Length: 70
Image (cartoon, rainbow, N blue to C red; front, side):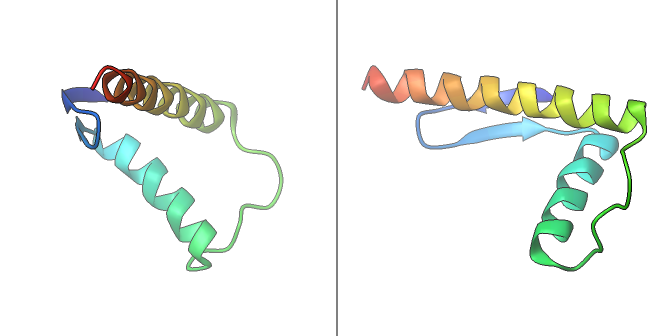
């Protein structure tokens, strides 16, 4: 994931196709368009979700910090 721009109210991110796929899978499952996975995630898939979650949390933290300075 690449941060293109981060502002207090919005962020522009560049996602790889794999990262976009992870986001879409999570949304589709949450919205009920896709059945939840049965059993444990494969290790590399779990690592991908974990890395993307950490990157997104960093962006949210940066947005919060910018908003607090306004």
